[in-house]
Image (tube, rainbow over all chains, first blue to last red; front, top):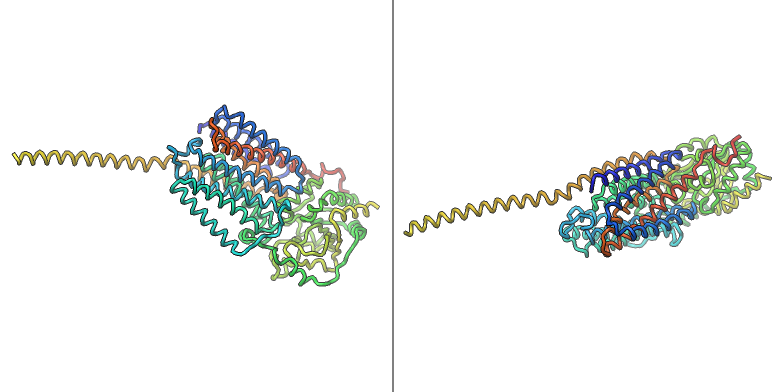
Length: 464
Length: 143
């Protein structure tokens, strides 16, 4: 690799760091993204100089096809479907890593990693690991995509001896890596590929729909490590730098998501959470206790007369596409002189930061949207907490019931507000299968109905 | 006579022994050269690569913790686009003149990574364009 090429790759790497650095604040983020685009363009152009010029035609066709598909999808996609899109994109990175690794295995001389057909020892190790991570990312992301898109049920799929099976497959894969390193046998290589593809499916299937924020972040991390491993195989520092950045980013996001649920990463990966509890736990505590039920008119009266309102959105808001109606409602309240703010729980939605994007899409200014630590203390001085499509993240059982599966999870203290309004479709318990004590409190009013419909009705009541 | 025969025989034996030990020494040197030099070429990169990798992990760690939680979705989208830099590997695989399985894989890899690059950056841009401050919001100022 010549000095010019190495330097261009270095500049690309720095551009990628700047792209992530920009995301520290919404003001610098757009500029950061431009850095990212420039870095990518530079990396591609630099690599073109290393290639046989006669291959340019086919490469241009490939980039053209991919670019057009990518651009159309990215422009058309609805913001509520963002998690699926990201999962699908992760699977593409995984597949690309498998393809690159396999191409290198079949034709190592093209990359200069072999002498006389025999691939260097360290390259073989990295190749084995890289293709395994890539394959797991590929099929794992496909499963995550199907779950998020609703193609398969979000219910965790658990069966007997699941973990033993996964462990056995893992051991076979590891054994194949050793055989590959010792003999460079194609058979061992393809065994790794097939087993890793199967492992990707099996690892993500038992994880429930609401754990998807962790899964997506984890796959994000994997796609980074796959790129880094490929970088080691091809002896390319740019791939290593970028892979490490992405891997670290995904790992940190996974950690934040796990902390938001007070669960360890192993607990999430082993899966099965919320699979059985569902009806039984809810029936046990729920019973026929009375709840206060209100109408849109009641809600609008309470909201109008409040001095301050905190809105707590959850995944239900995204499902009902209620964000625009919600913003209309809060605009009317602001016109009445009510202070309106939004409180976001770290695991609200189906991917990290999902709620923030949806609210931004509905033109909610980002300085009205606050994180759990920033706003939790203010609930005590707030007149109305308006919970829309969230449940478990407000459940006081996390504070005071050590028996509860969600005990210890950080929650938004909506119970401290003078009045709590809950928009829900029914009394059904949340994802964790735990009944919410808050529904039965005196200062709670339940608003039953579709979140979007209810917001629109409140808007009508406010206008009249 | 037999005595001189024995002496000359011994002499030639000694010479043979000398030559043998010279050859052995030479062989030893060659073995050493092979074992030391051959892995040094590839493992030399491994250490460099590892250095780069570990440092990049640290940079990533500190940079990502600085990212505001409100922008975690764009962060995922942009890391996704950026990890498609694997296209570099795919391009090299697509480079050789003759059409092989390896080259075909490279071309497919280029196409897949391109979906990701264009899709990832565009969707990030779309998201970031939506984040607005109060002043540029819907125009309904707070009373």
